[in-house]
Length: 391
Image (spheres, rainbow, N blue to C red):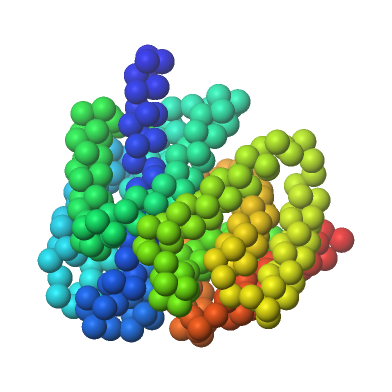
């Protein structure tokens, strides 16, 4: 394959990758409107996000083996078409239950889309060149949570919640055209669908203590990223009486903070991974204590958003290290380990988000702070257990 073709295929794949985050964050500013439109509770509106992540996690648990067997192009194209159809259907639903069901299947389709797009990089590049190109993939993945809330805030303010899904319809339609014309099949060696081999791999992953503790931590950190998106609209828009545009800007700051954590980790690339995790956890815990003290005396936008942004920078540094390191524990099947890891922590995040969104009230920011504290304390426990294993 010529280098020019490789670069073109990479650019096409980079267009697809942000869709994972866009599908969540684009309509977060519309959650209060969604609950009003369908005459339902805030929790039911929030569940349309949690159930999407549930589908995303479930599909990634098993789709890696399917994609390694059938290739990248067909699963990617078929899943994008399914995603496009589902996004169209959601716009015309009159029940929050029907929206939730469609979002579940949309998440399942997105799992195949995400794994197929990421696998293209493994097919095209190797060695040092892969790590250089994979950095673009990480940046593209981060773009969704960064730009989506701001776009969604303006779309909600100007046109209503349906405009967010029209955006996803157009984006996925362009994705179908790009895949059809610019992404050929890139897989070189197709794996066999042998049940014994698959069972052996999953048994090895489930039996590895460090790997599973890392999955739990990734779940907690991913939930921390999503928690403000779930609770924030009701605090910012309903209690503090700001517009959806303002919330979109606050969510944009959260995305930028997560991205800043990724950049910080790259700048500190020569430092020991465990030390970076340790100090990031310490910074996060100190920030939570300060956030709690401030919440006792003030309830305003700045007291909420500034500590949350600091917390997300620390969480992102930890997340980046665990996300890159965990698949290397299984060098013989690192791609399957990466897909299973992404599916497992997404699945656990869905359950954790569902529980927290039901338990956390939106009268003030103190319950939100307690939620962050629970997530970070869980990470501290997992880190301690992993360290005791090394000793």
